[in-house]
Structure formats: structure tokens, C-alpha cells
Length: 359
Image (cartoon, rainbow, N blue to C red; front, top):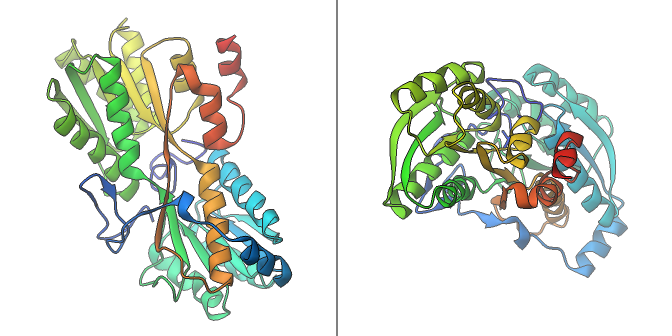
């Protein structure tokens, strides 16, 4: 999943793909809700006036990017943030990659503070460790904007400016709508969800299920199966297909296990069952453009996440009240819009294999 390791990938987003460890966070009534029950603000609502941009330019502010890993997703977030910082007259003085190591991230904070940045954008790896790691940054007055995760006991407005993440409910809903459309809004489907307590995947998975159950009375979820290790996805799918050989569709929690489900369908010679999953991946995207089992991939707008984070940093530096919880839009990618979808999400062209298959 965009360069994220297997079990952690949907958590340390990721979709996405992936603190997605918000304690007490939930989605209800068709909405993505923040860690303290905050109402989500669309990222498009974060704007700065010409006079505010002029003030930021005059301030000669700087920024640092503390990332959890390296991936296409991180590259797209970085591009969105860097372009916005350039617009605001702010220079990026450092960028780090913690390699999913919380201790390394703590060290990265110390290293970056020596460069005295005005703002830090970061995805904290572990709520407890990161709370300790980012305390010196808070104490020195650096404006911190968080991607998805929140350090333990941090308070918005005091310790950080805002949390920016995906519109998780809409990602699940988009997936449900896409799968329903592909099977004529009727039939039997399976729901393969992430069987672990992780905010991002839980919200997306449950939004899919809730949408099917509320909006599509002629679609029945006849099988459901939790998954923790993507490496077991093919075996799980084979067992599920043996019991339910007449499935019209399958929802898979994110792209890496979807590759295993796709392999199981191919092994069974099954060209009928449709797959919808979340987060862009070359193998899944290639099957989609070749009119295979995959009919849609729902992605986040990673570039927009970065832009919104940089804009939120501007709010902080201007002492302008920022919304606590900001979400970027979901995007449904199909064969018809795959090139545009890849660019909107990751701010880059699709892989060569997909572009070649489109010719």
C-alpha cells in the first residue's frame, strides 16, 4: 500500500493509505468524526486571503516535514505541501523519513529543531512516544500540523494547529456505490474487512457496510471475513469462494489484500465477481484497465492533504483560528478516469504498465 509495510500499512497511512489510532474516534450518520468528536471541515474551506499571504511572505517563515516513511503517498503529500509553502513564501528547511521507527522519529524532531523551523508537518508514529518526542517543538513555539495521528493528550490550539486526514466515511461510501453500480444494484457480495482496531480502516470498512445496508436493499452481504495479514488474503479468498461460488462482488479493505483476492479469482477462472478496494496500486489498477475483476479503486487526494496541511500551518503562524479536524475528498478511480485519478491523488502519472494498457 504505497510503500507501507504489511501489517502497519493501513494504520500508518495509506488510503493510506494509512494515529490512525484515534482513541474514541468514530464515524456516524454518514460523517467522518475527529478524535474528540470534532465535526470534519472540508479541506477546501482552508483558505488564506491575499493580505494574509502577504503577511506570511513578509515573515520569512520556514517549515520542516517529519514523515513516517517514503512512498508515492508521502511524495504526493510533500508535493502539495511544498507547492503551498512556495506560494506562502516559506522555505522547507528539512525533510525526514523515520522508516516506521518511533525512536528514529524522536531523534528526527531533535535534529530538525536545531534548524529552528517556524512550522512542522508530521505524521506521528506512536501516540505515546510522539507525545514525548514533539514536546520540545511545542515548547519552542513551533506550529505543528498533524497528518492523521494525534500524540497522546495533545490539545488543539495549544499543542498543535490542526489534524488533516482523509474523509474516511466518504471513501467507504464511494466504494459501496461503485460496487453496487457494477452489479446493477442487486446481488450477493462479500465484505473483507481489516480485523484490527485501526481508525482509518475501521471507518472505511464500516462505512462501506453501512452504505450497502442502508442504500441498496437488493444487495446482500452473504459472507464477511476479517483479515490482519495481507499475505493470507489469497487463502482467505479461496476458502470464501468455495463456500460462495456465486458472488457478484467483493469489497476488500485495501489494495494489497485485494491483490490476493484477485489471484484467487483468477486461479478459479472466475471472471464474474467484481472487486472494489481502496488505495492505488499498480497490480490492481492494471487489472482494472484490462477490464478484469477490479471495477473501481477509491483513493484519497494525497496532494490535497499536503496543501491543506501547509495552509493550516499558515493559520497557526498568523494566530488565525483553524478548524480542529480537516478532511480531504475521496476519489473514485475507474478504467475511464484512471490517468486523471492517479494525477489527482498522487500528483503523478500512473505506472507505465497502466499507461501502456490504456493505449
